Length: 260
Image (cartoon, rainbow, N blue to C red):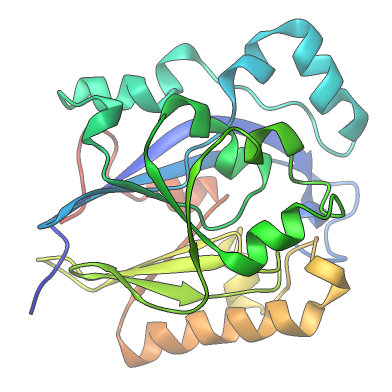
């Protein structure tokens, strides 16, 4: 059976926000520190990036930082991102450049997942057709219009499919209209499911709590995706990797180490 070869979690920044952003109607007044993650996957057919983090210029440039992030205060503080947390810097430490990435797979189009597209010019970008359609309505305030209008090489998808050997796209809508997760089979140990923002925290999975934001307020759809991920944990003995959980992130291999 074909499998992926290696998986690197990449810490591309951090963010501090009120907990109900991640756990719907739970944790009011409690603020948490969360990782902003991307993942590099090496397969027999090439390299995949699942998500690409933030637009560094929006964080590093004071005027842009104020324009894009101040309106969300105090519930959501502006993200923090160091120069060394940019995707090209991670690639360079592995002896790679942006052209060595064969495709970007975006779980969804929120700014902390799609903002870094500008650092990967010319790379094919997989995203669900429903996700891009919803983002272009302007109704999802987690999407910055300039980030989806940069001439990305969109490869629109409409269902579940094999992305590469050992890497399967999973439809997990709810948080956004076309949210996708990835199921990854590796040479050693159980499969890994990159949940994306279908599950920010282990708490979303353990207690079946929807994300704070659900597209068109469809909490039931988000919960159905959480339950599907949990079913994979049982049926495939898969590890579920929530996307904004520091305790989970610290339990994974620290770059440049990898999971294989």
